[in-house]
Length: 394
Image 1 (cartoon, rainbow, N blue to C red):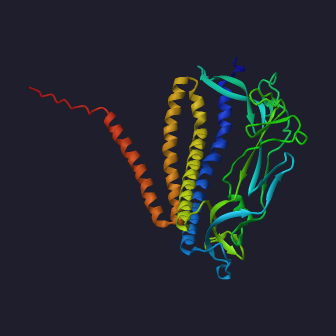
Image 2 (image 1 turned 180 degrees about the vertical axis):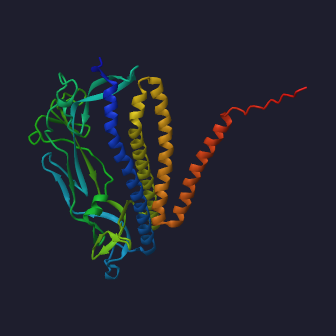
Image 3 (image 1 turned 120 degrees about the vertical axis):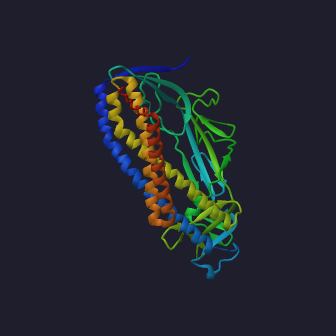
């Protein structure tokens, strides 16, 4: 039996119109913010690429066996096994592990509220929304506040976790004769499950261990109750790593390029400096495109919100509102694409002039192409000119 609740709400045309007018201000903020994001992103991308290029030209590979003073303050590439003498212990559960990291993962069996809505426009501009709230039980690593549910009766969750998630990290991690900095230790995160055989019930009352996990409460993994806890552990052991960073005595810190950008790379496994820089450049390109998409979506959403009062006004007749919405979406998409390209082009004019000129040409070409197609369509739809009829007198 599905545990669900439906709610039907109606929003008047006037209320929708006022809401859309208020949304225009938010739309303007998103629209203007998009220019800042796009411009900043191009500068960030170019600076990062230049710093990585500088690093790839100056880096030198060194041995882990000896700390040479001649390499101090230089950008170095080093490969070896990250080791530690530390033993990490979770005293609350009595779990110990000799390695680089130990994590306690805590989940609680709770009610979850899933929401879905269907909205229908009505003649006169009002909207009717049918919202369905489904309630399911599931494990979650975060506290779900049931007092915020639409239907609270019968769906009550505990107001806190009996046990909290926790992370432990080794303080002393070596790479041959070198000591790793905290930031590099933080980058070693290839984890795997740590299977727990048993837990002392004196330390953790009402607990049982099943398939390497600790169940607390009803201790029934196949049929848990609301409020039951499930605790598991992950570990990061000693492993081979490849590092590019600036050597400082017998440790490392980020290398600062001429443009002020920092370079510090870490890869799991053995990897050449050339491949590490290639991977870093590839990651930089991916991040650049992700942020470009963010800027594009911000601008498009902003324009959509700015034009939304027009759509709501036309929704007095739903058919007209739908047509206008589609037309404005296409228009907003064209404007967003054009302005995004021009913003990126201007940014590249500042950071890389030759590429910026090419992008501006492309952007202008897009505008001219759209204008040409629009003019051609108008001409094809225009009625043929009437022929003049001349009458001859006899």
